[in-house]
Length: 506
Ligand code: STR
Image 1 (cartoon, rainbow, N blue to C red):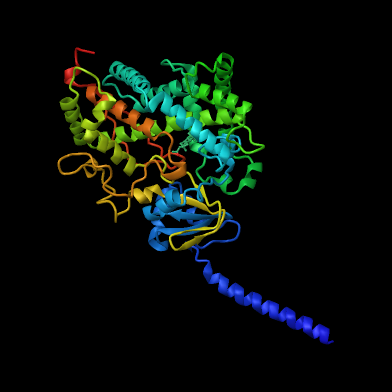
Image 2 (cartoon, rainbow, N blue to C red):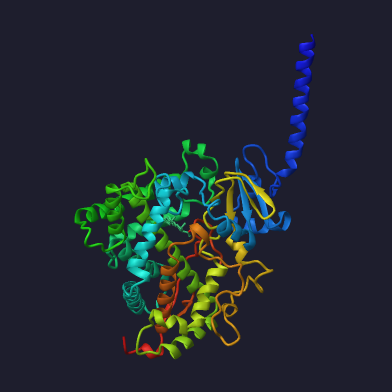
């Protein structure tokens, strides 16, 4: 009996101890304020019929503050809407938040994360990033080669615009063609002629991928829904198949022709790295191997990112120039004065064309390419500001909110390149630290330098020769983007008129 009583007493003591410690522990978890949520569907009722997630996340700040949490189905997600917290996540605690949540659509696109952008944080990922980084430096940023390639493409872009002069034209396609050829040179040491059927195939599958991948669509939230027919997944599978076919052809050719003494493009660089790695698995952990799949997915990433992002920004640029002809005129005046009509623009001119540079920066602010970046994942229990963040939380950086923060930007909805210039018209890097068009930290964009070169040269070449306007009978396109893995530009037609000084000479 006494033994029984003793055991009972012990159990009671343990129970009360457990309850006290639990109560004590509980307030220790100071998670960000959460949107109401239901079992299974989580907070999804807030997003019913919502297509522009970045705008909804921005609006929700009014009620829940700039840092809040929610449940995307059963996934715990934290949304960051101000730059202090964003910099803590990306820079100060970059490694801790360096993970990526797995998603059905991105897994399909990247053969379960064998690429760079959507891959988990690992030594393999670090090696892939390093290889691409050094290849970009070798072929491009460090040398004159890339400038030459971009200028050649800019010249044929201008030729095409001259040929279709004054008739309504979808400039998007011309710009995509030019940008694709730059990335093609870089990745495969090849380019597309006008009307190449392979280019058309690529255009089509890229569009399908952009429309279906990584936008928190229903199968990404409820992976078990894959077992049912799903329109988006069918399209994505078809597009990935088309992409793979194209990639495999290029890969096979490169393998066949490979010689380690003549490395001409990114694909060669990767093949060489694989050879070195096969010989002495230098940087990788035991059991890790740089496979053909890794090489293919890396090139696919760079190709897809290189084409989609730069063309999107160029299209936004053109759209804003149509809305603000006075901005276009100012850029042209600057070009006329600093470059003139006897030679084409060069990268060296960038420092003398602050207004064009400021316009590009303003476009990147007002319409960020990736309005929610790519979601991050906390690899361990951590914190943001004064709030606790559990391991495995998805962290979404709302770049849209950061670029439209009224505390940081004067009339953020207004397009005003002048905000990036001082009173004398000299370029200032950024008037507010609340500006991260290329992200930051360990996952920062790998192509920032390449993108800036292309944006500058393509716009400088085009505006030196042409004035862009709305064709008669067409209306101004609304500057409303469509949310996705990139913020998509509406389709519109442009009239490109050769400027007076260029008439008669080519
Ligand atoms: C575009 C379509 C395609 O064919 C391949 C890719 C893979 C890389 C993606 C790219 C996409 C869209 C833009 C991304 C890029 C990686 C980095 C870039 C998401 C889906 C941005 O973060 C903006």
